Length: 455
Image (cartoon, rainbow, N blue to C red; front, side, top):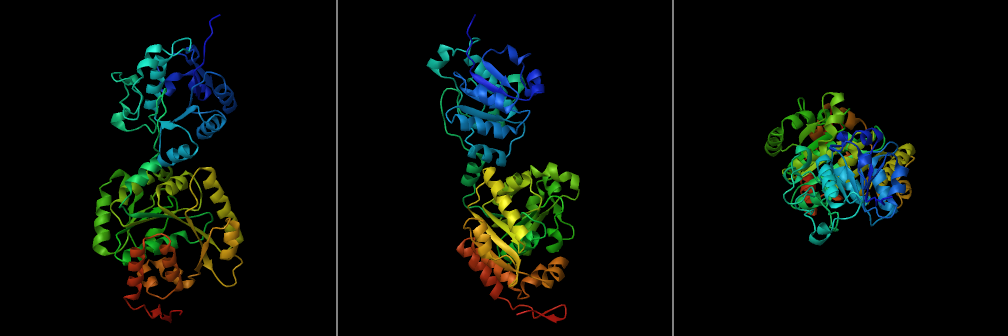
């Protein structure tokens, strides 16, 4: 009996294993490929990857676990084994989470197919490496993107990944090379660009839209070119608070990117924040969610400050948003249940591989008799400091609710000055100085709708 050495593990759902064409492969049967071990469940895949001779694992899908979790488990079992995650749609959040899980890379379908074809040329039917490849070394490096020999055409007529720029990993089957995640590339590219801030919260009604509106408006009032993005894709209402009657919506920007140029010109000419509002149709939100990181990256170089506000219902959009920004303002209100929800959300971020050490926590709607204080929040959040923001009370409803944000800023409401404290944790010293000067350069309004402002 001929001994065959398995060299690679492929984890995919049973339907895909029965029909390799669903994976983009030309093989009629994966069972006929002697050097590969096919698995449909996470436990099968982990057992197969532990066997002697296995050099590499590809995770495409799984019948009983999220593919990224399978890839992370394989890497945990053997940190020295090559593990790749293959997916049809890649994004910055997925790449960042895969990087934190120490997965060697994220491959598009075309790159996965080319990698499979190359591996087939590297190992013979008995699972032995072809000697000429070991001596000469294949061209499977960071520059060609998909891991092909120099003159090899992409499999199944797929375009070369070097042309499409799809591959997140270009590491070789026979040599180790460092990879760079989308997050790392973003950090390199944003030098000299604007500051991007996300306002998130784990409970409804804690004032995310209010604080995001004030952050954006204070920055614009100080002469900083500012863009607000309403990332509450289902029920966003920032356009009402900013007084924008016919906002440019996110689905419109996706369909017509040139609208971003118009928004930038408006922000410079009016001295007010421009706005990319939530989609007008709820059913568009899930489709638009994947475009948010690209919209943020497109705005980063054109604005001094970008403020994005997320909704209360946590989903993949929060991971994508947090991964795309420079700073995160994490809001809760003065209810203990809001703090509990915040702790759960922060723990979720940690499990997803999202950095939480730079979060700026704030307790909104705080009053002297509130049950929750900054000390309580700090203890629950393992020593992280929290800022107390006053309850804006009727001014928020009467002014911000009606779109009079500038009047609110001039009303001497203490919430305005406390939001400046948030900005001190986010912006540069020079930018904060400009914000402070803009507030003191003009006299505040004395009356609000016929009544005296609180002092």
